[in-house]
Length: 110
Image: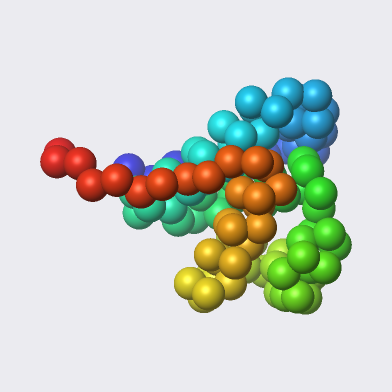
């Protein structure tokens, strides 16, 4: 199932404010983005990840941490983004470290 993500400026500000005061909300955003991408809904996962990045340190700080130019990062997580596995996993590794969480992938029978 594909999800369409249209986010208004007010919604983005609400996400930012809540993320800044609620660590569990930030972690849930990050987890949801990763789970959606693993489930094959990479477009929605990228959109949520972009919201997470904007609500936390931002693309400038992410550029410093990953050595990926800010413009490239913004395109990677934009609507038509297509990050390489190397860049995506590098970003996710940094975000997990920043958030103090660690995700694990486990096989399960469906």
